[in-house]
Figure 1: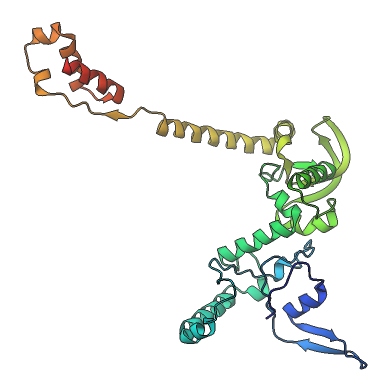
Figure 2: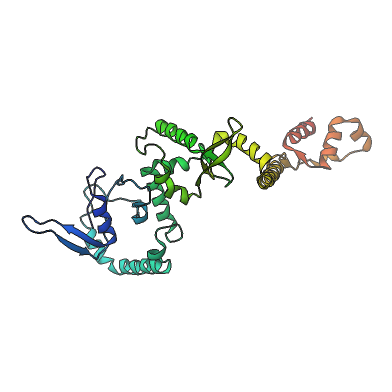
Length: 312
């Protein structure tokens, strides 16, 4: 286990990954021949910041299990921590056994780090790290910029690259460089985004253009134009949109029915207001109002009017 490692340390990535995974590492010896040593134990590092290593193929994120302490120790550490662990060693060992059982049950070694094998909190920690160290991942998660709703969506690689560069300028992010299909392939595959080189209709010009297209994604600002084009050209997509709009219309009607009605309350009518001759009830507007209110349920505003009538 390594102590707190700073993000600006010049650590050789290959050496660090070998320490994490286990394997042969080269050890230099002064005035002697270098030797190779096989590291059998998996490594663990403690740090307060992420290592800003390039992670285009998931080389860092797929090796990282992040445990975040919600209640960090006070400045300077806890001098009584060792004694506390010794006093609670039974509970620590039981939790460790359950953790090992979890790893064996979920087959972490074979399936790797994924949503299926990690607890929800730990999986979210990995996603947060990816959004922090990988600008492209964070950009593709920004629903205000891109839409990943349908596999039928597409946009040109140049348009996506321009939007990505603009997004980084707004966020004041200098990492990431230009959008490279080769380095972005790993992230694209995780989000079911593809890359094809063929002739497709450019929604801005309405003309067919041979270009590199990124499929399964569309710039949010271009969604209406693209959907209009796809509805005309693709019958399957037209049906999907029709079903979606019908569902949205139904949900909107249900919301209106649930929240659009007026609050109804019963109006308390005194006996004196309703007891009397038919003539007096008919001749008195106040009594008539009270009588009609007693036979129905009125709104809160009608309640105030009826109370005023009774009072008169």
